[in-house]
Image 1 (cartoon, rainbow, N blue to C red):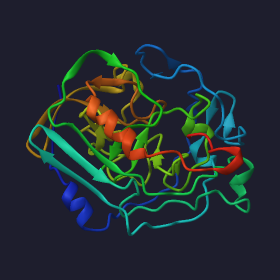
Image 2 (image 1 turned 30 degrees about the horizontal axis):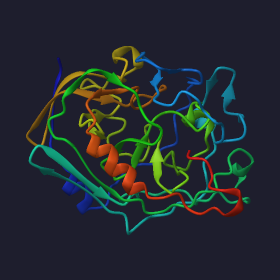
Image 3 (image 1 turned 180 degrees about the horizontal axis):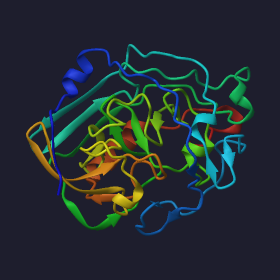
Image 4 (image 1 turned 60 degrees about the horizontal axis):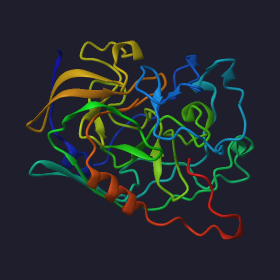
Length: 306
């Protein structure tokens, strides 16, 4: 078991602007994750609570697809670089839980311009009609997570969050496909869903520590999510991880000790494959309440969640 000590720096993270180089993605062919959705834990898959998908999301397969692979360096991004000075996020320990509060906007990080404009070249591929909106984060996760007797499935919607206050969703779009490959997102690989919540489906190039051996956020079961390289600098791949996209690691974060962590990877499913730990019923309830009712979209209804 490898040991990693990390200073708990959420307060410092929010106290000053985050300097992150928004580098162009490396030219690399990645397997498309379409079809890797299961009703049980399986390495390299999403164990999904939802088994029937209604379609929606991006409309086309773009030029960045090459048969069964796709190249992130060839994929276009939504135009714009919008900063959110009203972004709020706080993570604090309250006894045996960590309290999470914020408004789902990225702290000191940019987004593209949403809804996607018909004048944006990517409109031909993805017509995301959703504006960015504040969505309440007010819930708790275990400070000392407990492994479940067996892994549990991932919902559509929020499965974790970053230390920049952005929601993490699973790797699937509304059609049950590989969202990172199919959906056209912004310069930080994020976009808003039907209620306006901005989120990532994969490792964002704007997320501090995503390419390193650092804590980048937490899953809803209380286990930390770390970047995509180990302590030696080696890139972590699916073969290094279990069915939930994590592994046993001794990690210290702000005086709290963990024996397990999820890992980001370049390859699908990118973040989590399932929940290893127990998610509190109160966590699920409070997230549902924070999302609020669907926005009125007029006679055609609201757009699909993305």
